[in-house]
Amino acid sequence: MFKKTSLAAGVAAFATILFAGGCAFAEADKSGQVDYTAMTPHELAEYLIFEANDGGGFNLAQEMQEGGTARDRMQQDELQKACSIIGDGKPDEETMAAIRTAAQESIVYPEGGIQLGNWERGRELAWSGFGYRVGHNYDDHNVREVGGTCYNCHQFATDRTGGNVGPVLTGYGKMRGTSEPILKYVYDMIYNPHVYFPCTHMPRFGSSGFLDKESIADIMAYMFDPESPVNE
Image (tube, rainbow, N blue to C red):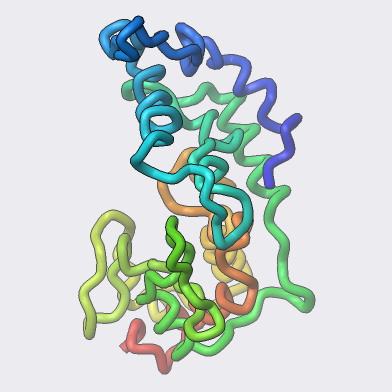
């Protein structure tokens, strides 16, 4: 997903901030009790997620639908580590540049160029949260397609109510048109938004493999097609 060498220099620049005190957990005493007060906030979070729950909470050994285990899913990748600055800080400029470069390298464009798909299917995908649950009761992708959960953060058409975490997208295609640079920008944003906004909270739908190119094209059609309710 992200080349290790691309972010290595930037990650090293603030590794001491992320992992101050190390990842070793406080040892239990003779009674088996763990002294939480002896842990740093980072150590406590690691302990509660990966250690404390193995005995009866989350089953971190369970296999995930996308492959691997629940424990694997909880592990940060390099980009997430690079963006996990304690407090209100941000990665330095070298790290931000490395993130942009790695994000650009991760983007794969469709053969024949970026095209709009079916806006009606795109509407269903944009308003669907169906995907990959943690648990034994997997989502059946043969019955229903993986959605983009775009509605959680964005408002699209006025016939339904979306979130307000991200920009309002109502009338997006009508206002911006469908020039090649605009289509590329939106494709990139859906595929891996870190190419423009390092450490953004928007998911990497394409580079993560969560949405395929056809689904991205359909969601884009929902945003741009003149017939779409987004552009009424």
